[in-house]
Image 1 (cartoon, rainbow, N blue to C red):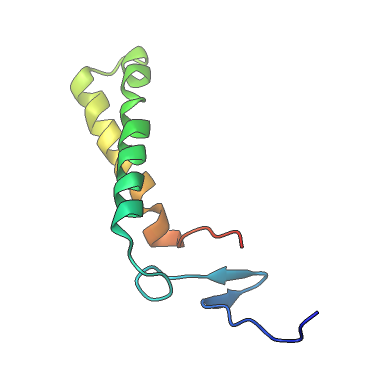
Image 2 (spheres, rainbow, N blue to C red; image 1 turned 60 degrees about the vertical axis):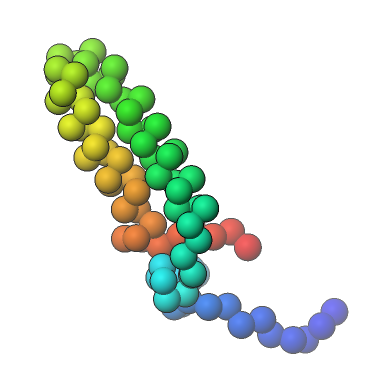
Length: 84
């Protein structure tokens, strides 16, 4: 076994590490695009559910835009979840 210590970037936050986007983690366009596609697909899947609850199609689309924005802003607000 080696006694070398590994430098982990991020701010120690209890048992966790806070990694701030653009400071501790570099921007990757492919991951960003994939996240936006998944976020949009997840949000638009809720339109039929919203319509089943009595909303119109336009209200369902507006609700999906709000949901997509909240899903996409998660890594910006909370950082990227990492499991080494």
